[in-house]
Image (tube, rainbow, N blue to C red):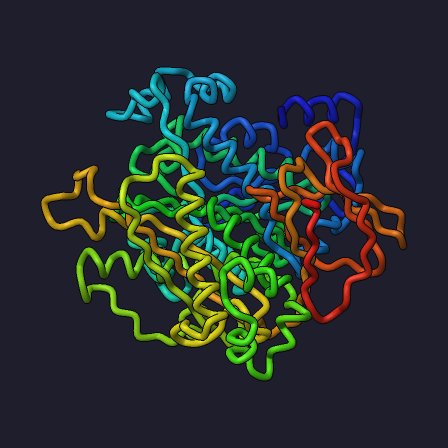
Length: 529
């Protein structure tokens, strides 16, 4: 496609815009090679066989049409360099290719003989495909940290400047990997390159390399050795590559956990997050539902008894806190299986700070529940986890919680939750496959207050398909995506705005709800009523 667009541009005599660099750089993690622009066509035809790390010049035709310098995406990169939406798009593209490698091979124009040679003993993948890679927050965290480090220190490679390998960085975020590896790719450019286009080019480059058997490339996407992935796609203006002030940088960390039977119930965490915020918004209703007397609750709250009448702002979800809570849950699971092997001596704030989270205070909460009889459906698992959460709420309101209040505390504004099924870890040796053994669930929560002030709108919209937000100041309307279970969170906008929940066909369900949130705190919105 790139070649076609370039030839069209040459045919119509379109010239590069003013300021376009006259050299192209093809990079590996070890070196860079300047190439005269006159050889561009030849380079584009052999780039795939040169390196797994590709730098593309954006087609001249599109540059002339879009002619924008220092694009908006990169201009925003200094404040928010990560592109999580495009990272999820990359995950989808990779999983589509894993599900049907033959279709990817045909689309990319790779001869079947070449693909089979590249896959070697795993050539069966071409016919049978592979199961999808599961998103894993700790792997995302290690990938993100490495990407940010490369931008901050202006280098590019698999090894950090302190000498750490991908495997060592993954281990540093408490991920216990049986096998692990990393994929890197980058696009450097001078003028506008849309993030969606960058994501598509990056994914195709990686898929081509692996199916074509480029020398020196270790297979990651088309490998049966990995089951989990974390992807970080960043945009920045640091000169990672000479003559190209802007760059998109992909870091993907892939791994297979030591305990392949552990179950990170990440999707269920959204439900628990919503229920916690419902309880914070209306503690009196939670008190009545859980059967705790008002006298007891007021005594427990003490000088914070006003919470019972006024409620508390919602806890905003933090991916870094989720990563830290998941790391703690995995460490606890490892200790159940091999007692004392994974000791944790760090205080919550230090442990959470290891993820890159900058907080002024932090705490943690943990619950374990033995469920007699196996839970087979998502609804049954939700029910067990909700009962665990209700126990935590009841203990806090009645004063029975070890370590004091966390959920009903005004000291924290952000949270990360990691529910996990750990039955295998607790089964007696020799009974690992005993299906009659009870299900055991672990719930780990990390709470923190960040150093930097940031405020979010947090809420729930039930079975809605999406949210529509209208700014009264600008008249601009935005569509917001809901998380699993109908929860949502976005950065607090300026001025008055209105929220409306809509179904899959765009029909209004609830709203519009007009809001003028108070600065300095998170705001809760319930669009289920």
